[in-house]
Image 1 (spheres, helix red, strand yellow):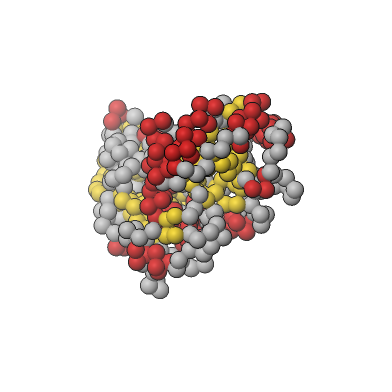
Image 2 (cartoon, one colour):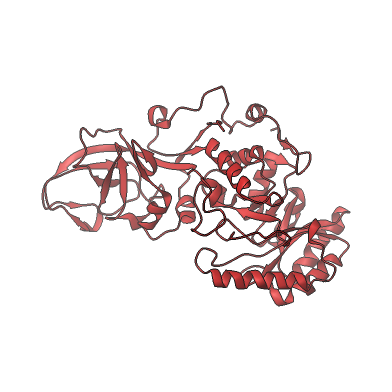
Length: 416
């Protein structure tokens, strides 16, 4: 398979039609979008992913950021369930500066699509995976002195300095060198001839819930940078913020990059964030179909464990999706589904393959009608935030829980 080659960080990507010709997962652009799956997709349960919305979101986010800020597209966990290959290819086309992933398998998938974009591995790299860092030109996040020695060995073996990012733990308590020990770690990296430091970063634990603690973490990070002898941030990617944590990026500060995750897929950060006013459109919608319509008498129980007892004769509709597709059991007797643009209450337990909903308020509901869990339908809408709240989940969890048996359908709406 041909790969997209980026000549430089500021270089343009090949025309979209060229990419589509060599990448079968990219929809062809022929002057019209792929029609809505509502009329032409033969599926029991599917998601629609609108790549045009994804590209528009990136451009709106970039327009809201200061000009010097680099855009690091976070696409871990199969691009949050949106599909890594088509998503990354579209983000390359739209102008992402770099990518961040959770593991080397994801890095390999991106590198199969294109070369020239830096790839940062956010999670720990296992010793048996070290060679893959070289194979796929990926950069690890260094958290300890043992990793300094491991990754220096890669540079020694390859005959050129090996690029790394240094992660500082400012209060998340996961990866990274503790902030008070960061200057010593910095000295060990820059003093090793087989390593090249390309960036320094941290991760905020409570950016969407506690501004005070986020400020504490930011101050610890800045203090650690200030104690690094000879540090020249102009040649490094300095990043601490994700979509939720960006409150301000003052001119003259060291920060020159942001990690953008769910915002590029249309999930807005909390109010008060620098990017909370970005008009990001939801990229993914989740649908199924009605497989049966019938009437149950008053007093009948619905689904496992008899958690729902009907108080009157009720017309019900059986929907061809369940927790085997990513519909959480926490939506049992709580969640709602759109059918013909109207909300229908889930009755009883969500089961592996099927859900029962109250269809009494629907006129002329039929087998084959579309049921929408996330998205818009005939004037009605259910956001991923609302879908998640019914079961006590967060949007990250809801997206990544959509299983592989759910068909992914990509729409090529390229209108800007």
